[in-house]
View (cartoon, one colour):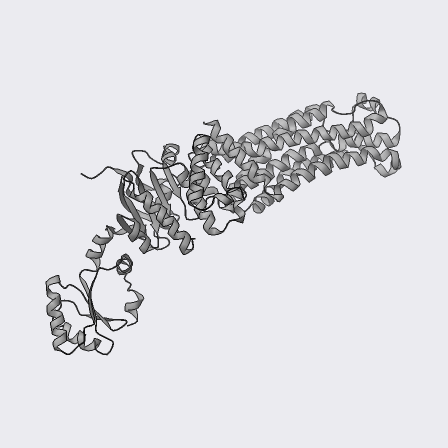
Length: 270
Length: 318
């Protein structure tokens, strides 16, 4: 494998992606809204809003371990905001790497069909393995990096808004670190595998993304599950969820690598 | 001595579902030759190019570039090929220069060499002033010219060009043809041109292969094909009024029934060079005015049409 060729494709794909509003806007707006504006609003809310308005977190409190409950503030408004940001909303940090890996994979694979540039790429000396590696890295690496930046922003905003009132940093907790460093990359890899497989068969980016959009559903389920008080992402639960995602990702990426090859792509050139 | 073929398709069959795109096609292209692949849409030209580039695998038969199998040694094969597909291969979201620097990187060109060569090619194709603009703002002709620049950037010894002038206006097409003619004139360059444009093939190609339904139905130099398919045609310009009388006179003197063409011309075939003065004498003796007698070698277009059982429009509407 010649890494200089892989790097050339990754660089090209990222330059191409940066030229698309459909890629750049979600890459900026989603982290900004979910990981900066939303935690800032929740973190600042106790200063301006009644405790009742922050919603009912009692169901979630029932799931929290005793040692965690001991550390929570007694002020109902602060309690609601702390629980919301440290437990309820924190799985949202997964949404950024998952969504971005899906968007970049759709743009980098189905987008080649759509822009009719796939044949030109297949006519280069890139081996099938180099091509697949480059395509997958071009989506996964930036998605994970932006995801980590997003998680850091979320933690910073949470600490700046609530931590100062409590006199202690709230994030990262063990759960948050596992979400950012383990679940984020593995969930992104699984999403990448799924969307890549769909993208190879799609003619347009939109079609690929619509079909591959289901990959965000597990994350939505996590947030809803925590909000409903039926699920708590304990460290072990996160290790397990990440491991399942890693196995799923391995299977999907092997299949995607096989699909990103000339024997599969050549007959689909039209 | 015949040069060893650089490109070989031996009894190659390729199917797409129930459609047979190539049907036991054999094609050998020696080094330094310029070969035209002619045929309707769907005749198998693009499939042949994709097989040579390793984008498709044959269902039967063997494909070789030099001695390499494009499916097994694809990277090495594509490293020495320059392939221009029918559609532009440049990315609209990149600038012209970015498209070229990507190609240089994946083909392993030294950055300095690539920059210098890109500069020369961009200038010679009139694209240097817009090299830093996104290709999305280029016209179709500019995209096709940039695609050709990208292909030539690596200075490939073997060029496979799939309808290189199809999307171009006449001026841009002439510019591309001029470049291809210069390339084709170099003895070390092997070129395969797929085209519908028969004048283009006649200008560029040492040899043409006519494909129909995935098979080769004729092969040879344009002159050989002309001689084989429309031999010894002679055209007399006698005027529309005298044309029927001329046919009556000539039909006793030539082996094939004469035909009346548009513009008061009569066409006869199978006439030896020495017999022409005698034919003219007979026409003049019958008071038929012979304004002109032209020995015409059929164009590649006429040969192509004849191979497909068609006649030129001018012969269809006398």
